[in-house]
Length: 329
Ligand SMILES: [Fe+2]
View 1 (spheres, rainbow, N blue to C red):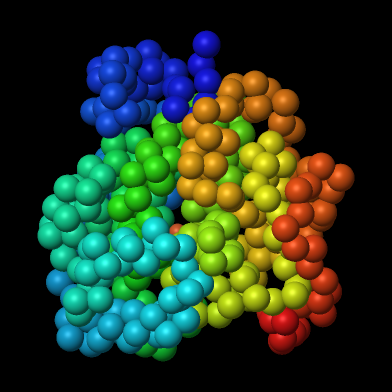
View 2: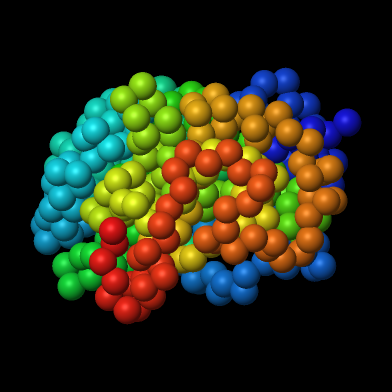
């Protein structure tokens, strides 16, 4: 029986190693070719990258660009201590991401590889789902090969190297989270075949990008979407508006989300092991069969089955959110 995020149809989609998954570090050696009936976003691959979308070399960042990294780093360090998950803060430290300038991916990958077997590879832009999943399944994290300009210091349309490396990579130093991310990549294939990519996307959104975790000292953020910017971390943890609900995978995969404003609802895990148990050890085939093609719950909803940590006032969103200039209270 296939169970959990980790189970994939290895015969059809994976390289030779995947059918013989003796250890959790085994990966797909060959980039799978999605069948034509599987929807993938129509991204046009730039001519200079191969089918894996990896850049031939990391961008050579100039002094101005390195200064943008340093200033973004310094800004985050004013707000993250006491708010970011301890695994994240430990990861920043282990990888010494504040040593100055955009990290060199070769050195970063060597250091991360020694900890959890992950590496970081430069990609030109957002990459197709099946390529993204394949990299994760091979413990490679694709990171944007550019940094935002100073004019766009606060807002980016596509994830840049600061979001990707500062936001995501520290958590990959945690062995449990590292395994979750690899399992997520493998699960992508199954979701594509069941046409449930939206549902799996919601899980990514509410965990990897906007997840909160309960720690001895209180709630902390572990999601990269929260940790790579200065304002959402305060809103997510301290504002009265948002709902904070304990993670329930079935429920989260049915929940809509916003991509251009603060989240009305955050989902809380009790620990990284809790996240792993709830996902990697679940029967996702069964879950996918029970899901509709769209979302069932609005992103503001609190429903009967919810185990609520904090019920929010939703004031910020009721006042119209960012578009109305509402205060994030
Ligand atoms: Fe991200």
